[in-house]
Length: 134
Image (tube, rainbow, N blue to C red; front, side, top):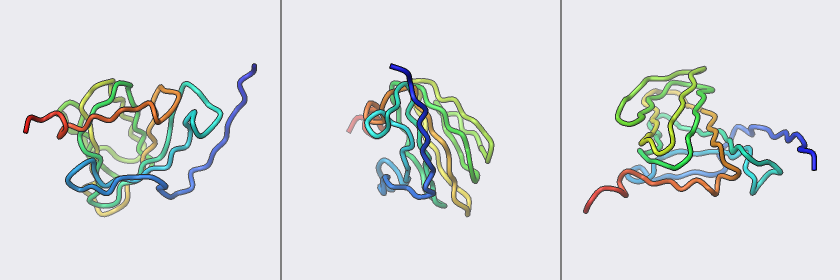
């Protein structure tokens, strides 16, 4: 069966997200491509939103990930190394690398995220807080 193209639009809103300042973070996202939502396979992608002060807490997951900054400035941490990134920056995050992102500025941040998986449901987030002994 031939593979058909799929076109989706960034609605400019975060339809999913977390609001857990002391947990997973304060981040919203809109999934664009995911095999459980769209007739696609092999890649999962979406747009994440960080308002000023927002963040996605340090975490790991099996597949590699890509962040592409569409708007704003943020601080990305990968395996303890922090980098300031801004519009146009592309960040490759190896599989199982501890990483997170935070918006320390006064303007919103939006970034494209991409996983080499069929579905977003396949991504198992392991937050660093979860790995620490009590």
